[in-house]
Structures are given as C-alpha cells and as structure tokens.
Length: 301
Image 1 (cartoon, rainbow, N blue to C red):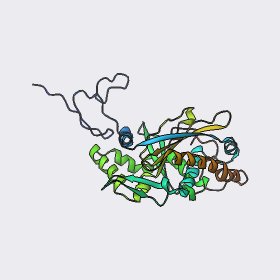
Image 2 (tube, rainbow, N blue to C red; image 1 turned 135 degrees about the vertical axis):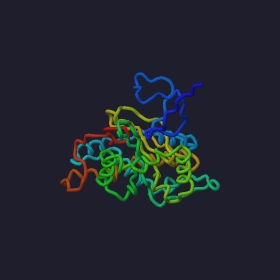
Image 3 (cartoon, one colour; image 1 turned 120 degrees about the horizontal axis):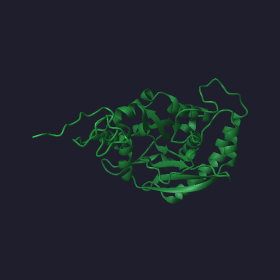
Image 4 (cartoon, helix red, strand yellow; image 1 turned 120 degrees about the vertical axis):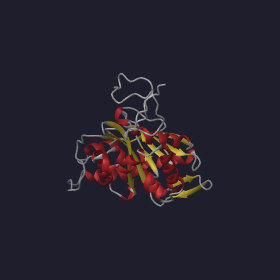
C-alpha cells in the first residue's frame, strides 16, 4: 500500500492542510495545477478580511475641490504626499470629534472604548523575499506633527528594510492560524489603550496613482479613508468607511465637510509655508522619490 508523500511545512507559507496534491517547490507558477499552500505574504490580509466581515461598516463619499491644494503640493520644494495631507487633516478632525477615536469592544460584553490619541494605519505595498506583501505603518498623533515629520515616517515605510521596519508583522504572519486569531482577538477586545498604539484608530489606503478608486476598503478600525485620482477640474472623490454601531451617516457627512475645510484651510496653509522656506537638514525625501510605493499608489505616497 502506498501513501501520499507529505511535504514539510516551509517557513514562507501559512499553516494549513497539507496533502499529496500540494505542488512541490520545483513547479513554476506557469505549470502549477491543483492545490497549493497559502503563502505567508497573504496571511495577515486573510485575517483582516475575516475580521472586516464582522465589522458592520458603511461607506460614504464626497467630491472635494482640491485644486489649490494640488497646486501648492506641486510648487513645494519638499515632496509631501497626498497620503500625508489626508492623515494630518483627518487626525485634526478626529482630535475635535472624540467619536472617531472610539472603538467597539465585544468582550466581556458589547461596550465602547475611547482612545486618547489618534493613530493612523497606512497600507504599504512592499517586496519582501521576492514576494508582494501588504504591510501596515503606524503614525501616532499626526495632528501634533508637521507635514515634514509625517512624510518622513511615510518615506521610512516605503524605503527602510522590511525586516526591521515590519518585524512584528512578519513574526505574526509566521504563526499558525489559531495563534494569530487569538492575538487579533486580544488586541481588539482586551488591550485597552494599546489597541490604538498597536493597530491604529483609523486607516488609509488608496490606488489613486493607478487611476482607480477603492469603493469600500476593508478595515477593522472605526473609520477608514480612501481617495481617488484628481480630475481635470481639481475634484477628488474621498470616501470614509465607518462602523455604523458608533456613528450615523449624518455625522460622517458633516465630518467629510470638516475634512475638506481642514485640507483647504490649515493643511493648505502649512503646505504653502514650505515653498517660502529652504529645505532643512531633516531626513526627508526631495522630488522625485523612486522606489516602493505607499498604499499601492505612486502619486499618493
């Protein structure tokens, strides 16, 4: 009697069922048929999608007139990304409206927890071990940071070696499914204030640099932002996904107005000051910036 040969679990794959139909490593992508293991690079994405299904989110959008902001961004001698602008603006709105800093907790019973500070969570697409990975970079208290400081953090997410920059996420992706699920559950329900420090209080992702829009970005946060490309008239479609258990559509509609006012007010004013000052010795990127892109988006980064 013959038995199917069981291949050993390789370190670059998620834990899961292994059987004789799993293709050996010598098989290429072009010739592979049948079952294959889930690569480790997809484990955390699978986790977030699973958690997103339990997060009752609704998406609302608004077309914002951002021609003046785009003009100031183009004139700035210091490269400031669209993502940095939106992070700063939404953090300011969040600072004034504490509901955005609240999170829903399921254990030991349904309740609301309010965080002291905002933490931005950014989706970052990087190459690691010759594979596409989706990592998440955290920016704490963006409302208290300058645009240059925020952009410096984004540049590190893009360009710093992935192993030290995202070592905790790489370690988490290497764990078996049951262990990852427990860690996610603990951070979402038990960790208290540390939930925001570890996961963020709001998320941002975009593919606007590819000329496309994300209709409803998955998130485990109370709010998630995305934006599309700037049209010839200087308008941009901005979408906010929110947890309907904590807020309603009218609240988000008003906060979208606040976001536009912040972008065209204080954020625009700060951006314009950069054109009037000489670049400092601070470690930030000058135009143009090559290399990996944030949130899948060359222009947004």
